[in-house]
Length: 425
Image 1 (cartoon, rainbow, N blue to C red):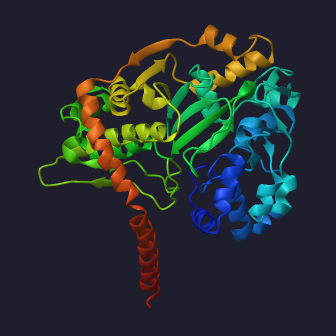
Image 2 (image 1 turned 180 degrees about the vertical axis):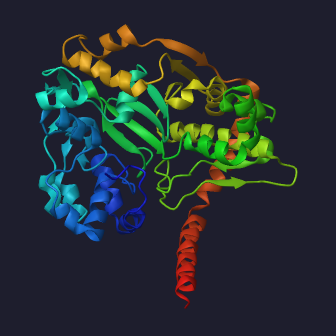
Image 3 (image 1 turned 135 degrees about the horizontal axis):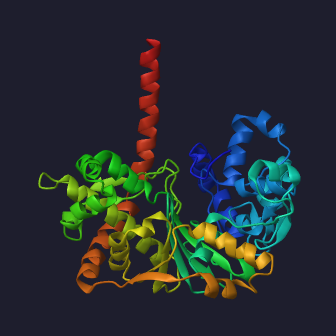
């Protein structure tokens, strides 16, 4: 299986950007291809290990394989179609995109597309013995994580926004018709009941905090072990001692080897600190990481081309009240957190309820099962500080693309030099 954050097809994405294929994919699917996306992944395998594709009968997303294992029924599901190779308006696969990417011979590896709330079949007896579910238990199609999580947060009507703060960071707006801002970046997915979800995606979300814990928070880790307190609470206590703006230290949260997908697309992009001097401490760097991720949310919604005043925050990062308040301050938007910790599972459970007739529709499912836990409004003083920082934040990344690509070239040279040294050349 190839994961969404796989970076091996980065050169293919750069080539498609240069020759115009990238733009055509975006215009057709509403999604900017990225190294781990389906089209680029197929193309990479076709170029590097074609024998694998020749032995392959079906190409499936992970939930499609799980559904097949439970029911014996093979389908794709419509919320995945927008991630390319799909026609976002028709909500079906697009052969034109296969031809455009030079992988037309693998078109027949894709099964038919069904709706998210459709019951595809029942659990087979063989699957029942493996997983413990009763034979015949209805199985619905389900949805891609961003759609499922939005539904779990009660977000399904056009104009509602949802940010999913997990390993990646998706900032999404429900729209009545497909939209294409920001240009050539982000993703578009089909929502149940005829709407769409426009997502601005930072490939790195809470992994920025994971990096912080592993590399900057030795003191907090030791204290957490000694006191049996949460390491995240201790980190937030340290961070809270530094004023908004982190003393002028800026952090761009682009840790993924896949680079950044939106609000601009650059496979070579990487995380970076800016503005460190002798007066700064690790606490300044820690605060900059929290703030950089919060400013990435602002960057996403400011680029989406439609007004967004309220955002529902879901995912693991939503459990931090400290961070949720920072998101409100940095974005100058109200942040709402709902009850429960597994928004994606909640969302597909609602789809299952609709599929078997427990709920009439999404409105019924949401009113019956989604509850607000907390809301956070921007504080004027902090919002003013972040407004100033955001201008510098954007200026830096808008002028970094050449340096990021040069870095990639330098790394290739370093790898070549290291290989020569190992060979004794």
